[in-house]
Length: 379
Image (tube, rainbow, N blue to C red):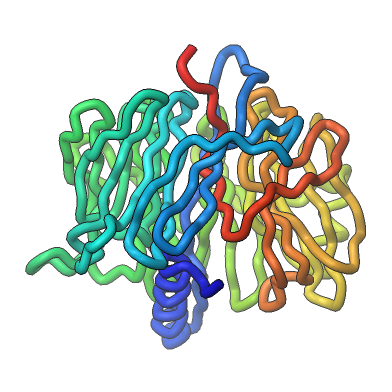
């Protein structure tokens, strides 16, 4: 099966940015973001919502993390040939939104549609989004943030806010001369955080409700990706990329200037793993600790996911490595991307998997399976 058009275009966009930043002495591979869940009483009845790509339609499944081999079909979404879905579950776990190019569409820049799905209905909200800009929920689940690029006489990338209830659109930020603008996080009582990548590197912008930049934090002189805000909103974790060298870093948002720290927890053995390889895909555990995937650049991979006060997978494997995607709300299960290769540049075959309290990985059936998040339905 050929690579889905969505992933192919993401790779093309990444390659174009790499060429542009290489001229300025940096490389990039910027992709979306993950989100931490913030609830007073964690629930344990969640199921993983995934999408399995098909050439003309993708199928949505709910996966019980205790029995990942048994999948419950949740619906099928027709789309233009070769285009998969990009989506995310609401932090409340009772709705999810996705971008889809409808069958017969001829202009992705104008016809890429945003759909909101609940247990009972699917609603069209708007169209004309850049699928490479990702899709972000506000942490209260009331709004969505997406990117528009190259519309009419406005070639700049723009971040817009879409009200999940009414579909009302509000402009939030326009990037001029940047290589990439990405929505990162929107706490209930705080600014909208946006990542800006240009030839000088990566910066985090805090955007107020009035559209003004309240603060700019320098994240790296290179490209960054996988930005994720801690559950208490005080720290930002992200992956820094310098060529094929990936390193997870954390910045305290209240610091002035911000302090960077490698996301290596010595008591979990990550320090030694990073010394001979790299780390990527930070995901916050509900308890506020950080999980990262590590790998070696030499032959053979390190299969290692670490989280304080949570099961640690630490198997030195010759045939793979794993990157975390999202913890369940109760912190008992972790969705992962498992690879048969040794690291960047040699990823091998990819599978989606889930890890339980026993620390073992269980693969989820299907090829080109994407994780939308943890689904809890209506209370």
